[in-house]
Length: 453
Ligand code: 4AD
Ligand code: MG
Image (cartoon, rainbow, N blue to C red; front, side, top):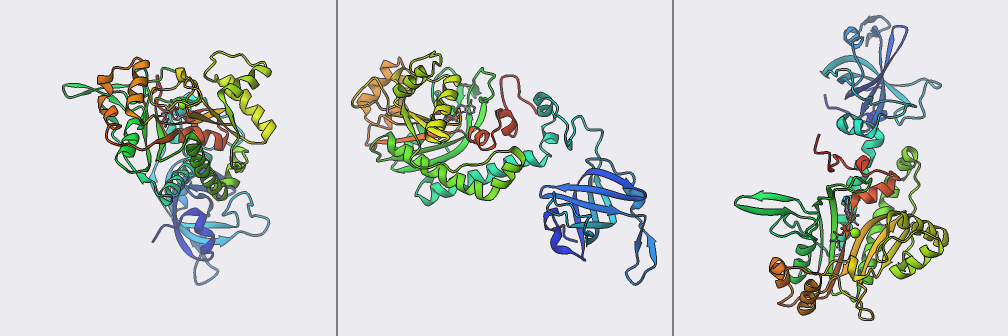
């Protein structure tokens, strides 16, 4: 018999079907057992009685699975066969999708037993165990439907970004994650043994997505892992995370990159809202707002002026502290009714050598960060594609040219003006769900102190 998933069972009223899943709760009313069976699609109420009616008549026969059913425990994995029946009016459960029906179980198989759980899976009204504890038992924590929702949204988010970029002529690349030189800066890089020499784990596809511009690809995107040896313990940094990277040729300035990002974001958020808006609101109380294009923009100078008026402490003239990001986002939300803000024109001191500088002020870069409700989700820029200037900028930053020789060569044989951005999907999901900690979003978080499970 073919398995029917819980959510689809409503279509099988009166029919004999097979379902599989986890025993979530067991209630006994007299001799009748009520079991909430959970699978990936939802909950189905299963009813197990000591006897069942004969197909031909009124006489009842013994239910052969009843004895085994009495032994069931929470989180056992089971297979049930039985008849889908309409629940009597008044006994229906409007809170679940399958609340109008139930399964009268006539056959049962235990597929896997469960020992006493170290953390609860089903805990209505109770406070969850600490995050650390839940991370130790991540596969149990992830059984909760509201946690699985994050990964369902992630799946569609990634598919929709891909769909958007592919339909707009982008080529997808997969650049190597093993590098002979660090891809961003030397400080936050993981070193690995590579046969008789050292290699580094890629901190960004930056150099290789730019190579695609020199290769004439014109527009590329990459979805892949990013490694950063960040010694930080913040709620928004992981040492391994997913990166969405984009690079576009023949741009006039970083404004073209900003526009490309805005359009992609609106497209993706619209789809997420359509498909998951109700569930996200139900489980997380977060209403998705589709942002209006153009998103608000502030230059770093303007941002600092606003922050100074708001009396927020300024730690670094060229960059924003988490506190400043928060206050600035709040300000923009109030003034413009917008959850996003692009901060542009970062000074050269806080930006890498490859960022192009403003013609009108060479101390500033044609770069931007995108903040979504207090959090940086993107960094982007127009890149310097002119070999001599790029070399000069690298020297100014104190880089050894020998070590970036291969990168610099990309710009020697004809490379169009180009720019792009890197977006952190974990950060984006934090904002979609209004979840404060990246550990809750990441399938398996990696940090200074965490390498398992
Ligand atoms: O801001 P980042 O470091 O920028 C780059 O990697 C550039 N190469 C991008 C470019 O095209 N100019 O990283 C890009 C994004 C950040 O905005 C953030 O969303 C995310 O990646 N990110 C992290 N996410 C989780 N944990 C970390 N440690 C992260 N570091 C950056
Ligand atoms: Mg950044």
